Each structure stands twice: as C-alpha cells, then as structure tokens.
Amino acid sequence: MALPDNAGGVPGDEVPFPEIVELNVGGQVYITRYSTLTSVPDSLLGQMFSQKSTKGLARDTKGRFFVDRDGFLFRYILDYMRDQQLVLPDHFPERGRLQREAEFFNLPELVKLLVPKISKQNSLGDDGCPSDPEESSPSTEAARNLAMLGAAAAACASLVPSSGDVGGKRSGFITIGYRGSYTLGRDSQTDAKFRRVARIMVCGKTALAKEVFGETLNESRDPDRPPERYTSRYYLKFTFLEQAFDKLADAGFHMVACNSTGTCAFAHEQTDDKIWTSYTEYVFYRE
Image 1 (tube, rainbow, N blue to C red):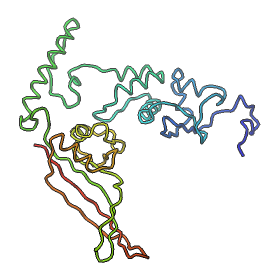
Image 2: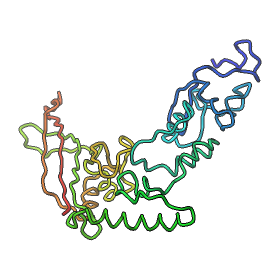
Image 3: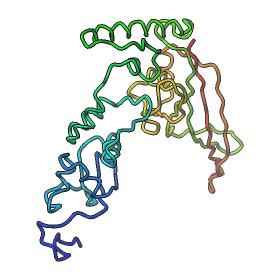
Image 4: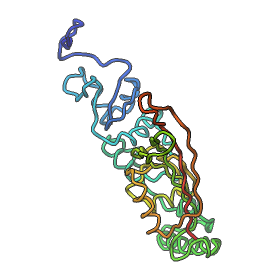
C-alpha cells in the first residue's frame, strides 16, 4: 500500500528532499547528492531542488524525479555541476547538442565553454596541422582565420597518399559477425532448421562503419569512438544479413574472407535432434 506524503509527520506540502537523489533523465537513471543538484543556485536544477517540498515535481513509476531531456548528454551536465569544470572525450561529436542542453538547464558558464572558437589550436580539430603562430590583429582576425584554414587544409591534404582516398571514398576493412543456432536431425539426414539471427556485429573504423550503415548503425555500446579509431562494439539495428551485404556492396566493398565455428550445445531428449551454435565472420574490403 502506498504511503501518503505526510506519513512521516511532515505536512504534505513540505516534504523535504533526501540527501541522495535518484533522477530519471530521458530513461537514463542517475544517482547523485542533493548538494550537487543545488550547487548552481540559478540553474534549472538548482531552482527545482531548492523548493521547500518535492510536491509538483514529475516522477516516474518508481518514484524517481523525471526530467524529459537527453539522458546520454546529461552525464556531462551532472559532471559540470559537481565541480564547475568541463571535461569532454577526444573527438566529441555532440558539442552542439550539449550546448543546447546547457542552455536548457540554464548554465551560462558552461554554455561559454561550449561555444565554438576558431583559433590556431582548434581550427581543424585536435588533429589539425600546425598553423602560423604569429598573433593576429583584431581588425584582420576573420580574414587571417580563413587564410589559415585554407593553407592548413592544403598542407594536410598533401600529406595524405592519394591512393587511400579515391573518388572521395576511403579504403579499409569492415568485418560482419553474428551468432546463430540451428537444429540438425539424426545422422544429418534432414535439412537444418535455422533460427533468427539475434544481432549483427560490426568491426572496423568508425568513419567507415558510419558511412556504410548510416542510421541503421547502433553506436550505444561505444558512443565516443573517434572517426579514425577502430571498434568492435557496434551492431546493426536490423537482423538480415542480406541487407548488410547489400549496403556494403552499394558502398563498393567486396568480400575477401570468411570463417565460421560451430559447437553442439545439446540434443533434444525426444527427437535426438542436435542443436548447434555457431559464430560466423565475413571480411569486406574496399580499395
């Protein structure tokens, strides 16, 4: 039986906040201290949790305070409220969206840290070529920045072998892997009965995987992977191998190798049919 708000002797409109607060932000659960949520008094969270009571705040079915925002990006909002410092992973692709979240939570100092700045250090990102260290005057800053961008881009392009990027497409490998199971009758005299593929895994460079599979690529298990790094934790949102092969073929890839392993899991007690499990990989390459 649910207890009323004033079961502890406190009037219903003056229920205090607990020291440890559970939040549900867009489906992601966070547990933090009450002092963290009120560390920036003028912020949205500071105002929400500085009230005299919890009455009026939205809650989910388990009683956690609910905020209808991006649950993944909220981790950086909460980190900032702990010590008022911004620490992001390398090659962070969600900077613009995080800035929007900072504006929503009314964190102006965080917004300032997230505003894009064109300078000799980050005009081309973390991996850009070195630019002219000479200081620029305010009157010619915009023109000099554009000139540095063009010169640096040309210098970087000259360092990249032309054979690695033909027609705007990069060369490289992508490996498709999946686990499957099938039933085989006694003495292998009957046809194998295959079951549905549970998940198709993708291994390769992040940039290549995103280029080929686009919105059908699930990046939730490795969300911050830089474009030029490799990953084996992506998987596809669909479970049809033919669809994966079609996308690779359309992108100019062709299969160069494959391998498979299988083990007998157990036999059916009544029919003696053997249930096998297998893991199969297909390696694709684009020149």
